Length: 456
Ligand SMILES: *Cc1c(COP(=O)(O)O)cnc(C)c1O
Image 1: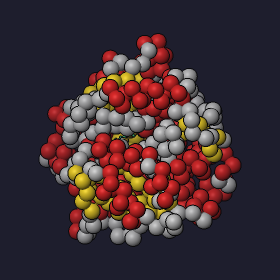
Image 2: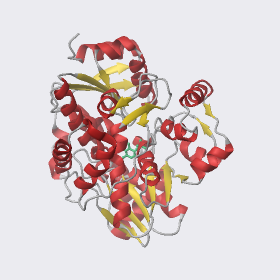
Image 3: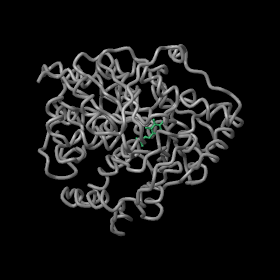
Protein backbone atom coordinates (compact mmCIF):
# COMPACT_ATOMS: atom_id res chain seq x y z
CA UNK A 1 0.00 0.00 0.00
CA UNK A 2 1.45 3.35 -1.11
CA UNK A 3 0.33 6.92 -0.51
CA UNK A 4 0.43 10.06 -2.68
CA UNK A 5 0.23 13.71 -1.71
CA UNK A 6 -2.84 15.75 -2.65
CA UNK A 7 -0.46 18.41 -4.03
CA UNK A 8 1.33 15.99 -6.30
CA UNK A 9 4.99 16.79 -5.74
CA UNK A 10 5.98 14.93 -2.54
CA UNK A 11 7.42 11.42 -2.83
CA UNK A 12 5.12 8.39 -2.58
CA UNK A 13 5.42 6.80 0.86
CA UNK A 14 4.34 3.63 2.64
CA UNK A 15 2.00 3.63 5.63
CA UNK A 16 4.61 3.94 8.41
CA UNK A 17 6.26 6.97 6.80
CA UNK A 18 2.88 8.59 6.21
CA UNK A 19 2.00 7.93 9.84
CA UNK A 20 5.13 9.65 11.14
CA UNK A 21 5.26 12.56 8.71
CA UNK A 22 1.63 13.74 8.96
CA UNK A 23 1.74 16.53 6.39
CA UNK A 24 3.49 15.78 3.07
CA UNK A 25 6.67 17.72 2.25
CA UNK A 26 4.84 19.69 -0.50
CA UNK A 27 2.27 20.88 2.04
CA UNK A 28 -0.33 18.35 0.86
CA UNK A 29 -2.09 15.52 2.66
CA UNK A 30 -1.44 11.86 2.00
CA UNK A 31 -4.10 9.56 0.51
CA UNK A 32 -3.80 5.95 -0.70
CA UNK A 33 -2.78 5.59 -4.37
CA UNK A 34 -5.95 3.53 -4.72
CA UNK A 35 -8.94 3.07 -2.41
CA UNK A 36 -9.07 -0.56 -1.27
CA UNK A 37 -12.53 -2.14 -1.21
CA UNK A 38 -14.07 -2.72 2.18
CA UNK A 39 -13.23 -6.12 3.73
CA UNK A 40 -15.84 -8.16 5.58
CA UNK A 41 -15.66 -7.35 9.26
CA UNK A 42 -15.83 -9.43 12.46
CA UNK A 43 -18.54 -9.09 15.04
CA UNK A 44 -16.74 -7.00 17.66
CA UNK A 45 -15.37 -3.49 17.27
CA UNK A 46 -11.67 -4.37 17.56
CA UNK A 47 -11.83 -7.10 14.91
CA UNK A 48 -13.66 -4.73 12.57
CA UNK A 49 -10.95 -2.14 13.20
CA UNK A 50 -8.15 -4.62 12.46
CA UNK A 51 -9.84 -5.81 9.25
CA UNK A 52 -10.43 -2.30 7.92
CA UNK A 53 -7.08 -0.84 8.95
CA UNK A 54 -5.12 -3.80 7.54
CA UNK A 55 -6.34 -2.86 4.08
CA UNK A 56 -4.65 0.55 4.49
CA UNK A 57 -1.54 -0.53 6.39
CA UNK A 58 -0.49 -3.32 4.04
CA UNK A 59 2.69 -5.13 5.10
CA UNK A 60 4.06 -2.26 7.18
CA UNK A 61 2.82 -3.68 10.49
CA UNK A 62 2.50 -7.42 11.21
CA UNK A 63 -1.10 -8.52 11.80
CA UNK A 64 -0.42 -9.98 15.27
CA UNK A 65 1.08 -6.64 16.34
CA UNK A 66 -1.91 -4.76 14.93
CA UNK A 67 -4.36 -7.05 16.73
CA UNK A 68 -2.64 -6.47 20.05
CA UNK A 69 -2.28 -2.76 19.59
CA UNK A 70 -5.90 -2.25 18.53
CA UNK A 71 -7.10 -4.48 21.38
CA UNK A 72 -5.10 -2.42 23.92
CA UNK A 73 -6.46 0.82 22.42
CA UNK A 74 -10.11 -0.09 22.80
CA UNK A 75 -9.54 -1.72 26.20
CA UNK A 76 -9.17 1.87 27.50
CA UNK A 77 -12.87 2.49 26.66
CA UNK A 78 -15.57 2.42 29.31
CA UNK A 79 -18.13 0.61 27.13
CA UNK A 80 -17.64 -2.97 25.87
CA UNK A 81 -19.20 -2.16 22.48
CA UNK A 82 -16.74 0.81 22.13
CA UNK A 83 -19.12 2.82 19.88
CA UNK A 84 -22.69 1.80 20.83
CA UNK A 85 -25.85 2.97 19.04
CA UNK A 86 -28.66 4.49 21.11
CA UNK A 87 -32.06 5.26 19.63
CA UNK A 88 -33.50 8.69 20.48
CA UNK A 89 -36.44 8.96 18.06
CA UNK A 90 -38.33 6.83 15.52
CA UNK A 91 -35.67 7.02 12.85
CA UNK A 92 -32.89 8.71 14.78
CA UNK A 93 -29.95 7.07 16.52
CA UNK A 94 -26.89 8.50 18.16
CA UNK A 95 -23.64 6.60 17.98
CA UNK A 96 -21.82 7.25 21.25
CA UNK A 97 -18.21 7.94 20.38
CA UNK A 98 -17.31 9.39 23.78
CA UNK A 99 -16.51 6.37 25.92
CA UNK A 100 -12.74 6.77 25.55
CA UNK A 101 -10.32 8.22 28.12
CA UNK A 102 -10.80 11.90 27.17
CA UNK A 103 -14.56 11.76 26.50
CA UNK A 104 -14.53 12.72 22.81
CA UNK A 105 -14.60 10.78 19.54
CA UNK A 106 -10.95 11.59 18.85
CA UNK A 107 -9.94 8.85 21.29
CA UNK A 108 -11.21 6.24 18.82
CA UNK A 109 -8.46 7.20 16.41
CA UNK A 110 -5.77 8.62 18.65
CA UNK A 111 -5.50 5.72 21.09
CA UNK A 112 -4.57 3.60 18.06
CA UNK A 113 -2.36 6.24 16.47
CA UNK A 114 -0.32 6.75 19.68
CA UNK A 115 0.38 3.02 19.87
CA UNK A 116 1.21 2.85 16.15
CA UNK A 117 3.73 5.67 16.66
CA UNK A 118 5.34 3.95 19.60
CA UNK A 119 5.65 0.67 17.72
CA UNK A 120 7.09 2.14 14.51
CA UNK A 121 9.52 4.45 16.34
CA UNK A 122 10.80 1.67 18.60
CA UNK A 123 11.34 -0.55 15.53
CA UNK A 124 13.35 2.21 13.88
CA UNK A 125 15.18 3.44 16.97
CA UNK A 126 13.91 7.00 16.33
CA UNK A 127 12.25 9.80 18.30
CA UNK A 128 9.77 12.43 17.10
CA UNK A 129 8.36 15.71 18.33
CA UNK A 130 4.65 15.94 17.77
CA UNK A 131 3.31 19.45 17.36
CA UNK A 132 -0.38 20.01 17.07
CA UNK A 133 -3.10 22.64 17.18
CA UNK A 134 -6.31 21.97 19.01
CA UNK A 135 -9.60 23.66 19.61
CA UNK A 136 -9.77 21.44 22.69
CA UNK A 137 -10.49 17.79 22.00
CA UNK A 138 -7.63 16.78 19.69
CA UNK A 139 -5.09 18.08 22.19
CA UNK A 140 -6.41 16.18 25.16
CA UNK A 141 -6.90 13.00 23.13
CA UNK A 142 -3.40 13.24 21.60
CA UNK A 143 -1.78 13.90 24.96
CA UNK A 144 -3.55 10.94 26.54
CA UNK A 145 -2.56 8.74 23.61
CA UNK A 146 1.19 9.49 23.85
CA UNK A 147 1.73 10.35 27.52
CA UNK A 148 3.42 6.98 28.10
CA UNK A 149 5.39 6.87 24.81
CA UNK A 150 9.16 6.83 25.36
CA UNK A 151 9.98 8.07 21.87
CA UNK A 152 7.58 10.98 21.58
CA UNK A 153 7.60 14.56 22.88
CA UNK A 154 4.39 16.44 22.31
CA UNK A 155 3.69 20.19 22.15
CA UNK A 156 0.02 21.11 21.82
CA UNK A 157 -1.09 24.66 21.02
CA UNK A 158 -4.59 25.68 22.09
CA UNK A 159 -6.38 29.03 21.86
CA UNK A 160 -6.21 30.69 25.28
CA UNK A 161 -9.63 31.02 26.93
CA UNK A 162 -11.51 29.28 24.11
CA UNK A 163 -11.58 25.71 25.35
CA UNK A 164 -13.86 24.40 28.08
CA UNK A 165 -12.32 23.97 31.53
CA UNK A 166 -12.57 20.20 31.28
CA UNK A 167 -10.81 20.25 27.89
CA UNK A 168 -8.06 22.51 29.21
CA UNK A 169 -7.54 20.48 32.37
CA UNK A 170 -7.32 17.26 30.40
CA UNK A 171 -4.29 18.81 28.65
CA UNK A 172 -2.68 20.72 31.49
CA UNK A 173 -2.93 18.19 34.32
CA UNK A 174 -1.08 15.31 32.64
CA UNK A 175 2.09 14.91 34.65
CA UNK A 176 4.46 13.40 32.06
CA UNK A 177 7.85 14.92 31.15
CA UNK A 178 7.11 14.54 27.40
CA UNK A 179 3.85 16.54 27.49
CA UNK A 180 3.67 20.33 26.93
CA UNK A 181 0.38 22.26 26.68
CA UNK A 182 0.77 25.81 25.34
CA UNK A 183 -1.92 28.50 25.59
CA UNK A 184 -1.68 30.73 22.49
CA UNK A 185 -3.03 34.25 22.55
CA UNK A 186 -5.23 33.80 19.44
CA UNK A 187 -7.84 31.62 17.73
CA UNK A 188 -7.71 27.96 16.74
CA UNK A 189 -6.92 29.00 13.16
CA UNK A 190 -3.92 30.99 14.49
CA UNK A 191 -2.74 27.84 16.28
CA UNK A 192 -3.21 25.79 13.13
CA UNK A 193 -1.31 28.38 11.05
CA UNK A 194 1.59 28.24 13.52
CA UNK A 195 1.73 24.46 13.22
CA UNK A 196 1.64 24.65 9.42
CA UNK A 197 4.41 27.28 9.44
CA UNK A 198 6.59 25.11 11.69
CA UNK A 199 6.17 22.20 9.28
CA UNK A 200 7.14 24.49 6.40
CA UNK A 201 10.41 25.35 8.23
CA UNK A 202 12.62 22.56 6.91
CA UNK A 203 15.37 23.12 9.45
CA UNK A 204 13.00 22.90 12.39
CA UNK A 205 11.17 20.01 10.83
CA UNK A 206 14.39 18.02 10.46
CA UNK A 207 16.10 19.07 13.68
CA UNK A 208 13.13 18.06 15.82
CA UNK A 209 11.77 15.30 13.59
CA UNK A 210 8.41 17.07 13.60
CA UNK A 211 5.32 14.98 13.34
CA UNK A 212 1.58 15.66 13.44
CA UNK A 213 -1.40 13.94 14.97
CA UNK A 214 -4.04 16.57 14.23
CA UNK A 215 -6.86 15.55 11.97
CA UNK A 216 -4.73 15.87 8.81
CA UNK A 217 -2.85 12.72 9.88
CA UNK A 218 -3.95 9.95 7.57
CA UNK A 219 -3.95 7.27 10.28
CA UNK A 220 -6.65 9.14 12.16
CA UNK A 221 -8.93 9.33 9.16
CA UNK A 222 -8.31 5.62 8.59
CA UNK A 223 -9.29 4.67 12.15
CA UNK A 224 -12.49 6.74 11.88
CA UNK A 225 -13.77 4.73 8.92
CA UNK A 226 -14.47 1.85 11.32
CA UNK A 227 -17.46 3.18 13.25
CA UNK A 228 -19.31 4.16 10.10
CA UNK A 229 -18.99 0.57 8.94
CA UNK A 230 -19.99 -1.05 12.25
CA UNK A 231 -23.02 1.26 12.60
CA UNK A 232 -24.21 0.81 9.03
CA UNK A 233 -23.93 -2.97 9.40
CA UNK A 234 -25.90 -2.93 12.68
CA UNK A 235 -28.87 -1.11 11.15
CA UNK A 236 -30.87 -2.52 8.29
CA UNK A 237 -30.99 -0.46 5.11
CA UNK A 238 -28.62 2.36 4.27
CA UNK A 239 -28.55 4.94 7.02
CA UNK A 240 -27.71 8.60 6.60
CA UNK A 241 -24.91 9.75 8.89
CA UNK A 242 -25.08 13.15 10.45
CA UNK A 243 -21.69 14.49 11.49
CA UNK A 244 -20.95 17.53 13.67
CA UNK A 245 -18.10 18.92 11.61
CA UNK A 246 -15.15 21.27 11.95
CA UNK A 247 -12.02 20.15 10.14
CA UNK A 248 -13.95 17.78 7.83
CA UNK A 249 -11.85 14.82 9.08
CA UNK A 250 -14.68 12.83 10.58
CA UNK A 251 -17.10 13.30 7.71
CA UNK A 252 -14.30 12.52 5.22
CA UNK A 253 -13.95 9.12 6.91
CA UNK A 254 -17.68 8.66 6.26
CA UNK A 255 -17.17 9.54 2.61
CA UNK A 256 -14.38 6.93 2.37
CA UNK A 257 -16.56 4.29 4.08
CA UNK A 258 -19.36 5.04 1.61
CA UNK A 259 -17.16 5.15 -1.48
CA UNK A 260 -15.37 1.92 -0.61
CA UNK A 261 -18.61 -0.02 -0.19
CA UNK A 262 -20.28 0.62 3.19
CA UNK A 263 -24.05 0.80 2.98
CA UNK A 264 -24.54 4.53 3.59
CA UNK A 265 -27.22 6.65 1.96
CA UNK A 266 -26.04 10.18 2.53
CA UNK A 267 -23.74 12.33 4.67
CA UNK A 268 -25.22 15.27 6.50
CA UNK A 269 -22.81 17.92 7.76
CA UNK A 270 -23.81 19.81 10.88
CA UNK A 271 -22.11 23.19 11.29
CA UNK A 272 -22.43 25.75 14.06
CA UNK A 273 -22.31 29.52 13.35
CA UNK A 274 -18.91 28.87 11.73
CA UNK A 275 -20.71 27.61 8.68
CA UNK A 276 -18.19 27.70 5.83
CA UNK A 277 -18.94 24.06 4.97
CA UNK A 278 -22.70 24.53 5.14
CA UNK A 279 -22.44 27.54 2.83
CA UNK A 280 -20.28 25.53 0.48
CA UNK A 281 -22.54 22.47 0.36
CA UNK A 282 -25.73 24.52 0.04
CA UNK A 283 -24.58 27.45 -2.13
CA UNK A 284 -21.19 26.42 -3.56
CA UNK A 285 -19.75 29.32 -1.58
CA UNK A 286 -16.45 28.42 0.10
CA UNK A 287 -15.32 31.75 1.50
CA UNK A 288 -13.59 32.07 4.85
CA UNK A 289 -15.08 34.37 7.47
CA UNK A 290 -13.83 35.25 10.96
CA UNK A 291 -14.11 32.53 13.57
CA UNK A 292 -16.97 33.13 16.00
CA UNK A 293 -16.79 31.46 19.43
CA UNK A 294 -19.79 29.16 20.02
CA UNK A 295 -21.05 26.60 22.53
CA UNK A 296 -19.48 23.87 20.34
CA UNK A 297 -15.84 25.08 20.33
CA UNK A 298 -14.42 21.99 18.62
CA UNK A 299 -16.28 23.09 15.51
CA UNK A 300 -15.14 26.74 15.69
CA UNK A 301 -13.09 26.45 12.53
CA UNK A 302 -13.19 28.27 9.20
CA UNK A 303 -10.49 26.44 7.27
CA UNK A 304 -11.41 22.75 7.11
CA UNK A 305 -8.03 21.18 6.33
CA UNK A 306 -9.27 17.72 5.45
CA UNK A 307 -11.50 19.08 2.72
CA UNK A 308 -8.32 19.05 0.62
CA UNK A 309 -8.57 15.27 0.35
CA UNK A 310 -12.04 15.49 -1.22
CA UNK A 311 -10.93 18.36 -3.45
CA UNK A 312 -8.11 16.16 -4.76
CA UNK A 313 -10.67 13.50 -5.75
CA UNK A 314 -12.89 16.17 -7.32
CA UNK A 315 -9.89 17.21 -9.42
CA UNK A 316 -9.44 13.65 -10.69
CA UNK A 317 -6.39 13.38 -8.44
CA UNK A 318 -4.57 16.24 -10.17
CA UNK A 319 -2.20 17.43 -7.43
CA UNK A 320 -0.95 20.48 -9.35
CA UNK A 321 -4.49 21.75 -9.83
CA UNK A 322 -5.32 21.08 -6.17
CA UNK A 323 -2.23 23.01 -5.03
CA UNK A 324 -3.15 25.93 -7.28
CA UNK A 325 -6.75 26.10 -6.06
CA UNK A 326 -5.63 26.06 -2.45
CA UNK A 327 -3.04 28.73 -3.15
CA UNK A 328 -5.80 30.91 -4.58
CA UNK A 329 -8.02 30.14 -1.58
CA UNK A 330 -5.18 31.19 0.70
CA UNK A 331 -4.67 34.53 -1.05
CA UNK A 332 -8.29 35.45 -1.93
CA UNK A 333 -10.19 33.64 0.86
CA UNK A 334 -12.43 32.04 -1.77
CA UNK A 335 -12.38 28.56 -3.30
CA UNK A 336 -13.85 28.12 -6.78
CA UNK A 337 -15.21 24.74 -7.81
CA UNK A 338 -16.81 24.00 -11.22
CA UNK A 339 -20.52 23.43 -11.10
CA UNK A 340 -20.39 19.98 -12.72
CA UNK A 341 -17.79 18.69 -10.29
CA UNK A 342 -19.71 20.22 -7.45
CA UNK A 343 -22.85 18.29 -8.44
CA UNK A 344 -20.99 15.02 -8.94
CA UNK A 345 -18.86 15.16 -5.84
CA UNK A 346 -20.63 17.31 -3.31
CA UNK A 347 -24.37 17.72 -3.66
CA UNK A 348 -24.95 14.08 -4.64
CA UNK A 349 -23.47 12.84 -1.37
CA UNK A 350 -23.48 15.66 1.19
CA UNK A 351 -26.10 17.93 2.67
CA UNK A 352 -25.45 20.51 5.36
CA UNK A 353 -27.30 22.39 8.06
CA UNK A 354 -26.22 25.31 10.20
CA UNK A 355 -27.33 25.14 13.82
CA UNK A 356 -26.79 28.20 16.01
CA UNK A 357 -26.25 28.31 19.78
CA UNK A 358 -29.88 28.98 20.63
CA UNK A 359 -31.03 26.03 18.53
CA UNK A 360 -28.30 23.91 20.11
CA UNK A 361 -29.54 24.67 23.63
CA UNK A 362 -33.14 23.98 22.60
CA UNK A 363 -32.08 20.63 21.15
CA UNK A 364 -30.19 19.60 24.31
CA UNK A 365 -33.33 20.44 26.31
CA UNK A 366 -35.56 18.53 23.88
CA UNK A 367 -33.48 15.35 23.93
CA UNK A 368 -33.33 15.48 27.71
CA UNK A 369 -37.08 15.91 28.12
CA UNK A 370 -37.93 13.25 25.51
CA UNK A 371 -35.36 10.59 26.44
CA UNK A 372 -33.69 11.53 29.73
CA UNK A 373 -30.31 11.60 27.96
CA UNK A 374 -27.89 14.49 28.38
CA UNK A 375 -26.12 15.24 25.10
CA UNK A 376 -23.24 17.63 24.54
CA UNK A 377 -23.55 20.76 22.36
CA UNK A 378 -21.60 19.26 19.41
CA UNK A 379 -23.84 16.22 19.35
CA UNK A 380 -26.86 18.52 19.64
CA UNK A 381 -25.91 20.42 16.47
CA UNK A 382 -26.01 17.01 14.80
CA UNK A 383 -29.34 15.82 16.12
CA UNK A 384 -30.91 19.23 15.43
CA UNK A 385 -29.56 19.12 11.87
CA UNK A 386 -30.84 15.56 11.42
CA UNK A 387 -34.39 16.44 12.50
CA UNK A 388 -34.48 19.46 10.22
CA UNK A 389 -33.02 17.67 7.23
CA UNK A 390 -35.70 14.99 7.42
CA UNK A 391 -34.32 12.40 4.99
CA UNK A 392 -36.32 9.20 4.83
CA UNK A 393 -34.91 6.14 6.61
CA UNK A 394 -32.62 5.87 9.58
CA UNK A 395 -30.17 8.60 10.51
CA UNK A 396 -27.19 7.97 12.76
CA UNK A 397 -25.91 11.09 14.42
CA UNK A 398 -22.35 10.86 15.67
CA UNK A 399 -22.23 11.80 19.36
CA UNK A 400 -18.78 13.32 19.35
CA UNK A 401 -18.37 14.26 23.01
CA UNK A 402 -19.62 13.33 26.48
CA UNK A 403 -21.98 15.89 28.02
CA UNK A 404 -19.64 16.32 31.00
CA UNK A 405 -16.97 17.74 28.71
CA UNK A 406 -19.21 20.79 28.14
CA UNK A 407 -21.14 21.00 31.41
CA UNK A 408 -21.92 24.73 31.28
CA UNK A 409 -23.94 24.53 28.08
CA UNK A 410 -25.72 21.38 29.20
CA UNK A 411 -26.62 22.93 32.54
CA UNK A 412 -27.88 26.07 30.81
CA UNK A 413 -30.16 23.98 28.62
CA UNK A 414 -31.46 21.48 31.17
CA UNK A 415 -30.70 22.81 34.66
CA UNK A 416 -28.65 19.68 35.26
CA UNK A 417 -24.89 19.58 35.51
CA UNK A 418 -23.62 16.35 33.93
CA UNK A 419 -21.13 14.42 36.04
CA UNK A 420 -17.72 13.27 34.89
CA UNK A 421 -17.27 9.48 34.74
CA UNK A 422 -15.59 8.22 37.91
CA UNK A 423 -12.20 7.68 36.22
CA UNK A 424 -11.95 11.48 35.76
CA UNK A 425 -13.57 12.42 39.06
CA UNK A 426 -10.65 14.41 40.52
CA UNK A 427 -9.82 16.34 37.31
CA UNK A 428 -10.88 19.67 38.81
CA UNK A 429 -8.47 19.27 41.73
CA UNK A 430 -5.35 18.17 39.82
CA UNK A 431 -2.56 20.82 39.48
CA UNK A 432 -2.16 22.43 36.03
CA UNK A 433 1.02 23.13 34.05
CA UNK A 434 0.60 25.75 31.31
CA UNK A 435 2.99 27.73 29.11
CA UNK A 436 1.55 30.99 27.71
CA UNK A 437 2.88 32.26 24.36
CA UNK A 438 1.87 34.91 21.80
CA UNK A 439 0.79 33.77 18.34
CA UNK A 440 4.39 34.40 17.27
CA UNK A 441 6.18 31.87 15.07
CA UNK A 442 9.69 32.61 16.38
CA UNK A 443 8.66 32.22 20.02
CA UNK A 444 6.70 29.05 19.43
CA UNK A 445 9.45 27.48 17.30
CA UNK A 446 12.03 28.24 20.00
CA UNK A 447 9.84 26.57 22.59
CA UNK A 448 9.46 23.46 20.45
CA UNK A 449 13.25 23.25 19.96
CA UNK A 450 13.77 23.52 23.68
CA UNK A 451 11.29 20.75 24.51
CA UNK A 452 12.31 18.36 21.73
CA UNK A 453 14.60 15.53 22.86
CA UNK A 454 15.52 14.43 19.33
CA UNK A 455 19.34 14.00 19.06
CA UNK A 456 20.89 16.58 16.77
C1 LIG B 1 -13.06 17.49 16.78
C2 LIG B 1 -14.49 17.53 17.13
C3 LIG B 1 -15.47 17.77 16.15
C4 LIG B 1 -15.10 18.08 14.72
O1 LIG B 1 -14.49 16.99 14.08
P1 LIG B 1 -13.73 17.20 12.69
O2 LIG B 1 -13.09 15.91 12.39
O3 LIG B 1 -12.75 18.30 12.92
O4 LIG B 1 -14.78 17.58 11.72
C5 LIG B 1 -16.79 17.73 16.54
N1 LIG B 1 -17.14 17.49 17.82
C6 LIG B 1 -16.24 17.27 18.78
C7 LIG B 1 -16.69 17.04 20.19
C8 LIG B 1 -14.88 17.26 18.48
O5 LIG B 1 -13.97 17.02 19.43
